[in-house]
Every structure is written in structure tokens, then in C-alpha cells.
Amino acid sequence: MSLESLVLTRDADLLAVLRPTLEKLSIEVEICQEARKAADILISEKFDAVIVDCDDLRGGLEVLEGLRSTPSNKNSVTFAVLNGKKTSTQQVFSMGVNFVLQKPLTAVNASRCFHAALNFMVRERRRYYRQPVKMQVTLSIAEKEIKATSTNISEGGIALMLHQALPKDAVPRLRFTLPETNQPLELEAQVAWADVKGYVGLRFLNVASIEQGRLESWLNAQMEKQLPGSQEILTTGVNSRS
Image (cartoon, rainbow, N blue to C red):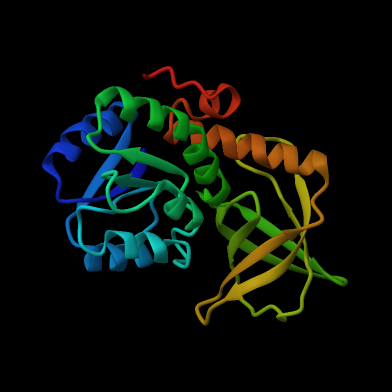
């Protein structure tokens, strides 16, 4: 697993700088040359970084304006590329842009910018990161116990496969042991969503610090397996691969 970026531009010179810079940092690059198509992609797909050529691609600025209203990418790290003639840095920062790049973009400036942004990308990846995991989970509601099987887990909640419906206002107590650990976790949760096939999403509530620490440590270890170097970036802001 790598970090993923969407680059909206038709500028070949810009791509000649961006692509090798991003790939050196193990950031996958998807290129889009049309604003309307990019807007559609951003509705359905999640990216760690969104890079928009605002001034030299028709509709680029509008894509950037609408980005924070997309459910999938409202918290993605965003980069506005300006030509110094049309859009001001103040204007794009007011839209929630995180970083600004100016044309003509050099490899040195691009490298500095994306190195500075890596920590933000990895933190956002960890925030929404969901680890697929199949394990038995016991739900306690009043004096009743229900057995379930998990499908994935994150810092904020867990998805389960149940063989019976849960009341929407249920606040079950969950018990489970994460794979490769021997310390059971007990967490309170509430129903966030459910579907007709028996899948349910639960949001953790009032998590004790010791339980939160165990869950975060396990998730960090799983994420490190898929995104090597992520913990180094989070703790020091340095990427050893650069």
C-alpha cells in the first residue's frame, strides 16, 4: 500500500517535475486532465493528496472550491498550483488549501513542499485507516450476549457481520482480542449504520486511555506493514526513503 495522489493538470512541464518527486516518496500518481472528470473521481475515490493546476486548466479552481464538500476527500491534503498571474495565495488558502506551489515549479521546491506535507498525509491516512480483520466479537446488551464476526476496525469504530438486527439506539459492550495479541479489549459502542445484509458499523464511545493505546498500537503496526516508514514520519517528520 502506498499513499495516493490525484493530479489535475494538462501541463506537461508541471507533470515532469511532480511525477518523479511524488514517486520518490512512494506516492502513487493518478493524472486527470479534465476538471469535470476530476470532480466525479473525487466524489467516489479517496486520495491522500489532491494537486490542482488552478490557473492553467479550465475549471481547476472550481474543483478546488468544491473539494471540501466531498465526503471522501474533505480532509485530504490539498495543493494549489498557481502561475502568479490569476489566483492569489490568499484566495486558495481561504478555500482550505494546505500548500501552494508556484510555476515554474522546480524539482527542489517540489521536493521541499511534499516532504513537508508527508506528515499531514500519513496522519490523515491513519485517521481514516480501516484494517480488514476477521475475529470473533461478543456484544453484551443488558443481560443478553450476541456473537458477531468483524470485517474491519479503525481507531473510531468497527464493522461487524451479525445474524440478527441490533436496535438503532443500542449501546452494546464489545469484547474481542486483536490478532497476535493476548490482551482482550472491552469497549462501549453505538450503532452508526446498518444494512439489510446483516452488516453493522459501530462507533466506539468513552474509550479508556489504556484501551485506546492498545488499539492504536495494533493499528499502527498493521499500517506500518502496508506503508513502511509511516511511523517514522509520524514521530519525527522524516522519511528515510528520501
